[in-house]
Structures are given as structure tokens and as C-alpha cells.
Amino acid sequence: MTEVKVMRTIGIDLGISAAHKAIVLDERGKGITPTLRIASDPVDLARLLDRAREGCQEGEPLRVVMEPTGLSWLPVASYCIQRGVTVYLVNTQQVSALRKLYSKHGKSDRISALILARLPWIHPEALQPLELASGSSLSGQRWCKQREELTERMTAIKNRVQAWERAFWPGLEEVVENLFAPWVRRWRET
Image (cartoon, helix red, strand yellow):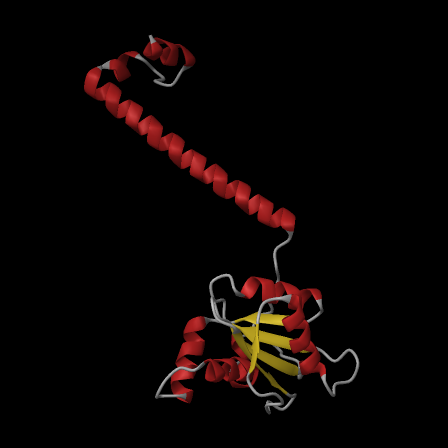
């Protein structure tokens, strides 16, 4: 079970093409803001963090809880983490189940933001702090993915060459040990 510190919480229902909706709760889980409309730009995010810190002591921690909606979460998470805010990405299926409990008659962005903000009190085990990968780690992942794609392509090409040779040069595999040796490739080109 993850130990969650008592702090102000921001629940953000991310929009892919529409504005995000956010609600700020105090240390006891009571709402201290109405539903706020924000964009992913630094000015709106700074305004949101300032609003969440109103009336707090200097250096009091904040946390943000949101669902990983497309890649909308990345600029928000990056901005918040750079400013010392703990960010939690939560399982969308769990939030959906909680949303159904809260509102049987429909989904609203306000309800989603409120559920996300209250999640530390409702289901603290669901919270794992987000750690963004470093640039070198992302570069390594990209390299591995590209290598895997090239390996798959090479395998597909070799399979096509072998199928072609089996069809038009039956018995070649019994005579030639390595169909992809340099001398065989030169022979194929002539």
C-alpha cells in the first residue's frame, strides 16, 4: 500500500481537443475552487498551481491526479513535475467504475475532475507517482524499437527470398549451405 501525504490535490479531467477541467481540494478533501477550465499552456497551468496554493504555507506540497488521456497528460505532467508537484496517472477503468457510482445519469467533466481529485481518499492504493523517463532512456527505447522493426523487415525479406528460391531453384538449399553468403548474393544478381 502506498503511503500518501496529506496535501492539496488537483483533479484534472484532460480534454484532447477541448479545454481541461480541474478542481482543487484542500487537505480534508473539500473543494476550494469551482470547476476551472484550463489549457495545457504554461500560463494556464501556472494560474492553476497559484490558485491551488492560495492560503497555503510556503513550500506546502501539491499533487495532481489525472487519467492518461492520449498524450494530453504529457505536457501537463511535465510542467507540474518541473515545479515540484507530485503527479499521479491513474487507471482509466478504475476511474470509470467510480464515475458510474457517482453519477448514474451521465458523464460530466466536472464529475470526472472531482473523482480524480478525491481518489487519494477513496482509493489510495491506486496512486503511484509518475516518473518521467530521461532523454537518454527515451533515446534507448527509440533505438530498440527501430532495431526491432529492421529485424522484422530483414526476416520478411529473407523469407521471401527463400520462398522464391524454393519455387524456382528446387534443391538449391541442399547444395548451398548459406543462401545469404556474399558469393550467393553475387550469383543471384547475375
